[in-house]
Image 1 (cartoon, helix red, strand yellow):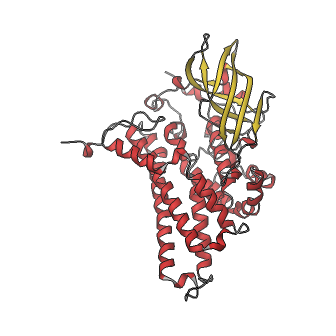
Image 2 (cartoon, one colour; image 1 turned 90 degrees about the vertical axis):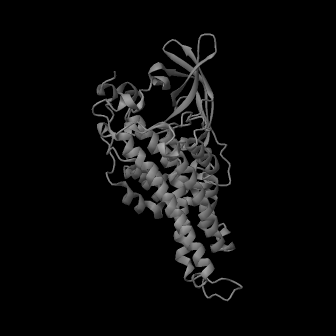
Length: 415
């Protein structure tokens, strides 16, 4: 069995212990640069500097690396706050801070290579779309990875690869650290989309890049949760299951986008007239007021689902291994929340009216970001609710990342 020493890192970081109010204070800065972020497809330099200076990139770093060992809920709330200023920035930040914090908890054999200055940032494109050919000391990696959110600001990416054997056949799936500063790597500026342009989710390319064996993560060798729970000294974040962390790692910006739309519509409802109708203001219309109220409740409901899902990660996973059914419920919470947020955002734009779609109105950017970001495959509302129904009725999983969704709860089992 592995000991806690196997998980000790010598990397150290500095960060803020209370990031949510810090993120709130940065919203005006992000808002001021949101248009440029969308236009250029990357976090703007003054914003990037502010995020670094505030220590926000390391808020999920474990205590053994000098971080606060922050909860997943704190990370979700921080990202959602930033998204109220710029959704694209918040999306890229969410990936960069989440992956960087995770890797800071890796053994020194990895962190001593990756964190040469302590300021390095990482993101990830987990689909194994590149091939790794064995060579003495490691592998030669060649391939492309799509949707590398945050890659414009990353030093490394932790990407999925297919490990080949000596005969050239795929032997296993793994994760590889790809050094973006290596001449064998490139980023294609191909993220041209109707929304979420600011996330910079470009394609990453490696052409015969050497990756040492120490920087290959053999996923089959990851200890199961039951084993991790027996290792003294591990922190709650070490026990977050990856299958459930995936949807929760891309959802928080959408919470902020919908909230920003709601706040803008509410602020203007008491002064904005309803052109062509007899109401003095939008607020004086019972119909429009009810639409605002229903949208607010949907956003509140989305938060409740996400808080339940995050509670399973922060609290329950620290006490016992999450079952396949638990993970299916977390996936369903995320997908259902996404449906609520998109529905609320669309209704609120109905209230805001055609003026909200003027290009100089931030509402249209929030709306486009919400409608594109909430369609991430990891957040599919319909497929996630189908997964939950399958778990409840003892049917096979429809999610490749989560093949086991058992056991069926006792109350749902046939007598």
